[in-house]
Image (cartoon, rainbow over all chains, first blue to last red; front, side, top):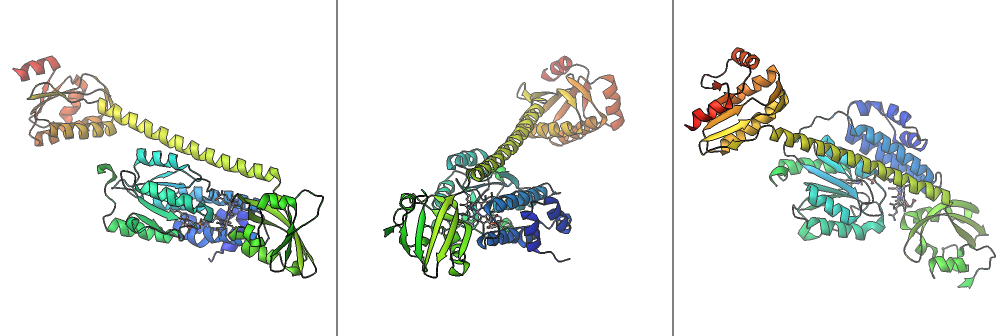
Length: 220
Length: 251
Ligand code: B12
């Protein structure tokens, strides 16, 4: 059956998480996580953004829709997942300081989980010093960052610069509206990657793994 | 720019149909400095919206918009706008009702608290697993008594899982050590099930393959029977007490 993101946007705006889940239940059951995110939930959130621009809804409605969307994503998080992780790859995800948009970030965390990765999702608005401490102690293979606000570009730049220098040289993947706007410096082209959707993330994971770019996290 | 006269202490702007600012109230200057056009103080994500909403055809309109104040702070406000004919519009900005701001701040706080709790639980779980691992490690210390002889006392209750973990550890240690004679002492084992014993039987075989000579001590009569049933490898020696084994092997 064909499902429409417009309809999902309505469920989300009504705060109707049960309705949302029932509507997309085939996708939940078939475990088509990527499709659920890319074809339905993300477009639904963008539709909500457009409806705000058309003055049909308020930011308060966006809050409710976000909470509902978050609920559905959290359900996916615990969905059966038995991917193995022979390389013990680890990812840490967060959004930069004063960036509150976290829906895309959380989806990305689930994509890593589905691929068997060990995941530390630190959520939005994480002060850079905390992030650096966490990265140094946990030594992730990959760091996932997200930024939606144009005003966060300077902070994002600083964050990438600082994190690219930590000892274990983690890969850094950037997402969110600002990913495309972020100029990756030449010298970081092998370490920093930006992607504006989750299919791109899945492809990146496949290519990097095939290319043997993820070495066993335990052997350093 | 002319000062717009109003007794109500709020930022009010007067603009033409190109959104050039013709005048404003003192409060507007206090908030925004001296912008030339309205778009200068509107967040880029709201440009499209304000162009649509602030249209003469709309006559009177109310909508939310994101503004940037003179400090560069981004702020969501309510905008009330009206046209005087086709040429001039007046609009005023009102900060959002503080209750909404409060609710949204609390929502964010709740969200990050949940986040922190999640993370703490995860860390606790990891700590517990670490403790368990350490505990397992301590359940089979590898003590090199002489260059030739090593003693491995086994402690605690042994089930399948633990016997696997211990076995892996013992094999690794035995492989690294030069000692060829090993005493595995069962005296301090609290309880061990049949599968646990089976695991040990496998361990004995692996150690033999590494060229180690294994002596097992402290096995009670019941476990001896089980071992017997499982068919212990020929070259494994059983001695009742650790003391006897050490005397014999260091002779
Ligand atoms: C929902 C929403 C909110 C919610 C946020 C809820 C939350 N906690 O996430 C609330 C109401 C709280 C909010 C607040 C604000 N918002 Co807002 N918000 C939106 C909205 C409508 C949708 C965002 C969303 O959830 N998208 C869905 C996700 C899934 O999409 P995505 O982030 O692009 O993610 C995809 C990819 O980028 C990628 N991805 C994302 N992250 C990552 C990470 C990795 C590692 C990878 C690999 C991939 C990846 O995968 C996703 C799927 O493809 C957008 C409109 C829009 N067009 O984006 C405005 C928008 C982003 N917000 C905006 C603004 C201005 C604000 C506020 C400043 C003011 C306000 N409206 O109250 C505050 C700022 C808060 C802060 N300090 O951060 C502006 C930004 C303008 C600008 N100049 O940048 C926008 C564009 C709306 C607009 N037109 O004005 N917002």
